[in-house]
Length: 114
Length: 110
Image (cartoon, rainbow over all chains, first blue to last red; front, side, top):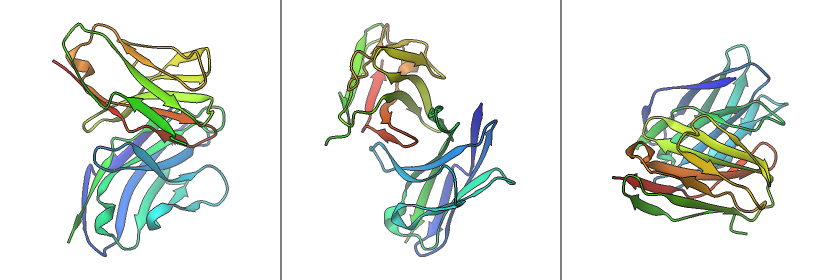
């Protein structure tokens, strides 16, 4: 079984500041980890994913995340926030190949302060 | 290539009515999923399918039914709608690890 905890349901950062969205997971098997973004009244779009290999993964729109097995974390970062980054972000985990069902966190709403 | 499409976009139902939410994908994906999204709760898996003719329950299946007669279509049926089914419903499909989501159906039951 898998679970995901996202710390902070709301995060506000100033434009140009570092974005850090936290995600911790629990999994009984080697996990696949994902970050999705949801803009208002839209579906979810994949930002990035970790399956195997390099633990630092880069995604779209300048976002990246690092898989840290020892900390069971997969935090999402972006060096410099842009107004267009305002959205809701979801961390998700699956059990890997052959077990693609996703378990989502409760989401973090990111607000960018001009 | 339209990806995952869902109809309708919005619907208001009265308690006890039934309806079918439609989902179609044109990517020839074997796996398809139905989720519901409630405020502050993330997405919860209702049902999923690993191929035509095969479906299985997710985390919150009560009050819903699905069928998968073709690779492309995965309709979600609500029988006897209840206020607790007011939510936004997302369909998704996948081949491999990445899921592709439709735009959602916003359902209100009053």
